[in-house]
Image 1: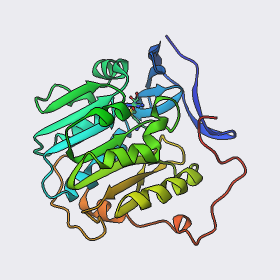
Image 2 (image 1 turned 45 degrees about the vertical axis):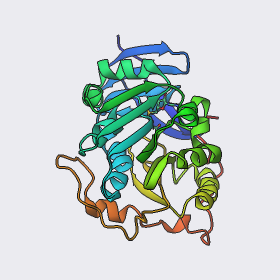
Image 3 (image 1 turned 90 degrees about the vertical axis):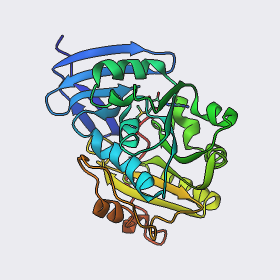
Image 4 (image 1 turned 135 degrees about the vertical axis):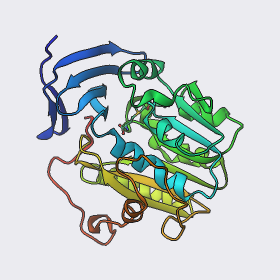
Length: 286
Ligand code: SAM
């Protein structure tokens, strides 16, 4: 069925649109509205509550930038925890490494099911024997969980709805208790262009909680502003001085040079610089 244009507003006066060839799925899950479209420009596109989560064409930029800095800088990652990430892309990247076990904790089972069916390139690792897929609220899971991890990856959606808690200080303090000594957390953080206040607030509490709390950046063509910010958090590993062990073969975007450059801080994030303020900058969900 030909579908009408799909629009996502990043600000009241700007955003992204797709002219889908057809709508593959539209459903209301217990947590959110889920839509999947077939498009010529970006292949299949997953939206949750009207927000682009992933597209077949550019997902590797995001997933490789979320996963490889932490996995390649940790001396010997054996146990990995992914919070969110129900599309499977982060899990696929983690299982390129010889890890012993990778647990993925996704709140919405419907997302996992839909991505198994419509995104085979992303969900290809759900059946790997090292994968432990848990359907639960990530915040509740780490509150109850007894296990600790070498690397934790937070592949959450925006700081609203079920995902709001995954951007808060108390969540990261709890997550820190789940890290083994020398452990690393990497978390998607937001748009340096449109979520600057949010990033600054987060930088303040992350800097208090971790010895090394560093933002890094990468392209995300279908996310607000086209480039994305991630947080690298550790008490043991400083990404500015640690030497990466190497990265797996077969990556589409990431390599060690990209990894080093990603930690270079843009001037406008330099606290002394004047903030880039525009009249209608703001979070993409009003
Ligand atoms: N990269 C995407 C982004 O930046 O918008 C996120 C992709 S991934 C699909 C986000 C996943 O987090 C969704 O499947 C959503 O259901 C899940 N999620 C949201 N809140 C959660 C929570 N509290 N615990 C676990 N998973 C959660």
